[in-house]
Image (cartoon, rainbow, N blue to C red):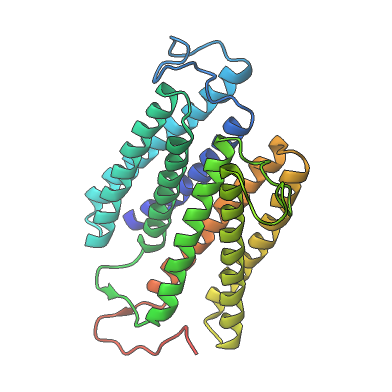
Length: 305
């Protein structure tokens, strides 16, 4: 029963984390990041400020973050109390550490007036936090007497590569956003054609090249999943990831064409975060099969052809 409560709470926090990340994108796109002034944890010198305009947007973001922090602390103590498997105990400690780092980065972002590099790192820590939550959610109902099935290590490595590419792409995207490099190039070419010249054009082009490699890699993995008859659950996850990639490409083009309209910019982040979540969960699915076997039981390899 306790493991079920941990699993349900972890899922709620995953949803709240997704909302917080996307809403953070709205805060940035609407240029409301300093709505509380250069103060933290107070907002314009008050615990509860006058809620209007940029202040309302930024304060709402902080309130969601505070609720998330409290729920994460409750989850941590619940895991510690429930005597879960050792790996889950370690994951909960990593989760709390990431939360503390994220709080400090959030304060630094405000105190230092939104420096692009720190804001981008802030997003990366949020993604790591989301990945840790997904791991806890997928593993919470597994018993300590269960072990990993023997999966194809090469497939696991492919998912690690996708996650790494995705993180770097998201980091560059956030940096471009906060340095206002988004319109350094048009949706297809830069000022002097396909070859970038200025630093903003190089960063923007690098982001697009990485996104292209990532898209190709995810499409390739989806193709392999059907060609080699991988487990249905993995095929479905890769299909969902491929659809998100297609959507992300279209939204990215529309974001540039619309001169980075707020709605398209936020949707671009929403799709990118959803893609990260699906790939993270698929990675756990590969490493820890839903058909995990008890120690001593025989296991056929359920995933890989």
